[in-house]
Length: 113
Length: 117
Image (cartoon, rainbow over the protein chains, first blue to last red):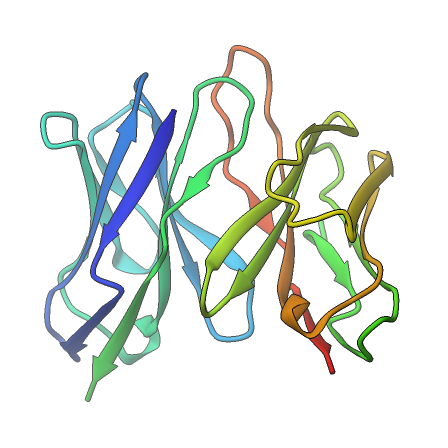
């Protein structure tokens, strides 16, 4: 069984400030982990994914995430927030075999000018 | 590739009517997912197909919902009869999932915004 918990349904930061969105997972086997972003009236699109090649994963738009097995975490960060980063972010965990991903409840990021 | 294509983008229907949502996955992908997104419940997986076969439909809310995948390039989600509480955004997603290999990421369509009045 696998599950994902995103801590904080809403996060607000000032433009230029650090973005930190938290994700903890539970999986009976080493998982594959993903972060997706959803802009208003759009579908989800992939930001980055962890596939065990490297624990620090870099994605699009300056985002990165670090896989920490000891903490069962995969937090998403960006050093400097931009207004265009305002969106909803979803963490997801996927089994190694073909199957369905499990999504977190999402975190809405607001960026203040 | 044009990505996952869903139609219609918006649908407004009266309670009791049949609604059919359509999805064309990315060519070559062998897994297809239908999700429903609402403010109250977030993103819910309704049903998952692999190689056109329904693998897990445990998320389908009730018998009013049905999904088919007659071939690798087309899927439908049908609600009959529709109810106001079915109002939501319905997403279709596809991915390439191979036995003994890692799942690739899911590619989502733009969604269908359904309003049942």
